[in-house]
Length: 80
Image (cartoon, rainbow, N blue to C red; front, side, top):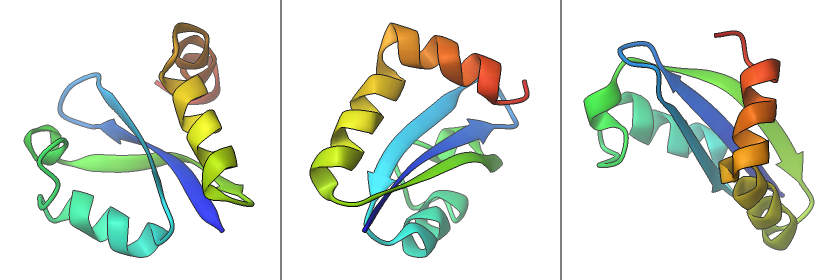
């Protein structure tokens, strides 16, 4: 089982999209500033999670969310 997730920076209007097999561990890394990609955007808020059956499915969803259409849809789903 894999998770696709979106974090929103409460500091600036930035979203981080990622996938992981261990959501709790990965979120701790983000929240504790141990992720180089998000530590400058702390504090972060989890705004979206989708459970996927496998890594391939999760990768496709993550890629879609990072695309122009995916970002547009996330803007409508996620409260700004």
